[in-house]
Image (cartoon, rainbow, N blue to C red; front, side, top):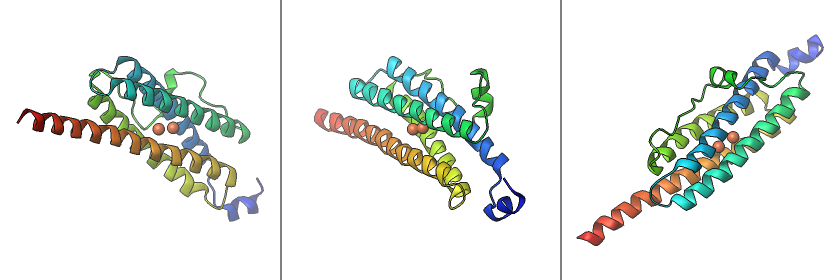
Length: 170
Ligand SMILES: [Fe+2]
Ligand SMILES: [Fe+2]
């Protein structure tokens, strides 16, 4: 990019590439967290939650693909070794050590909120400067917001179910 073009674009390309790599690593971890959660989940609404987790896992993997395509277009190389996912990601991977659905939902809620902040940040960095990266991050942000809502709804439903169950016993 020419010196003047860079000056007026006010976009730090190195910083943007770092954010895209972080996001890429986080998507793989999010994919695995949902996928594994779907396998081990126990508790109320297990079948619906398993289905939802598998759907989210598929979307996180699709996000990784979009990011990988964009990283390559911008002249970068997506992280080559899975062992670098954890050290690059800033949203932490939470192992589903307690497979009760509420614990899994809580872990995924934390991850989704971190993802929302990531894409909000990339949108802020690229808005009006790098339309293609902005378009991709905006599309991902929309889906992460939906994920947060869906995970939160399951938690509300389970809490309501517990309340309803208590009332029935009165
Ligand atoms: Fe994602
Ligand atoms: Fe998500």
